[in-house]
Length: 349
Image (cartoon, rainbow, N blue to C red; front, side, top):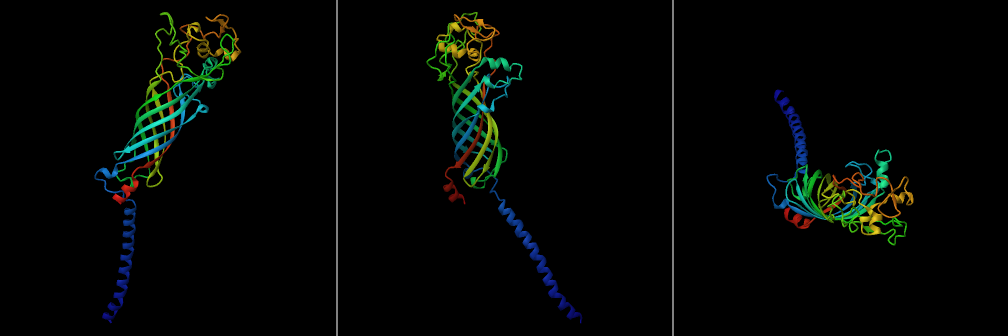
């Protein structure tokens, strides 16, 4: 009977053992599958198979910070003056976190004293200045990107997304313009009325005038239309598929000029400006009062009165803040495509 009981128990023990082994084996298979799904390649080094290049196209939004901003602060801008731009770029990834980009960007900046805040204590004075501008920017830049999430794999196994920071150097061409008024300061018709005028060529702060050593703007020189800027910012990159990424970032260009808006120093003696057009573009407060400013004071031009504190040579008649530099902000959405993806895919699969 004892032997019979052992023979009857043996199938039960075999069944239970196989059941337990099957469950453990299924768990091991699932765990192994998870490891395979998350596999990112070898992490011992960053070889040539993990270095690749990209081309990109970006749509940008540009904003201006300077003397014609809503508030006299560095972070003040008028969103309604946001203007579009675009860029073409070539990028090269050469490390687990590092990408270098060369880019050409074109865009427009706008600003106006119309945006001056009425509740700001200086707002009404800046509004009465009545200056405005646009400036088309043509920029070439070299920027280094630093990813916060490391990727030691080939492009095909790159991270799904990563935030990044960037910094670089840029050179750009600019040329501030403003629309010409309907009349000159003496009331005679202006044949250039309504046209966009290059302000640099006029010397609105006396750059091409003969100034006395006692003049506030004495020694002023024409500003360069070729300038340098420092780009910096933050963003994030999202992998769409094996070869396409979408980048979104916001950054600033710190420039070394105060003349993106053609405004920096004091008002100059209007009679020393070379042409009636230069005079009309330098001082525009009278346009708010149809040529008859309240409590107007005589200017250096015969028969032309100007608003007190504006349009005449005096140390306190400030046209702009020459102690600061202009800045522009660039918000970008970029699509990049990995070059040579078919070759790499066939070679390293």
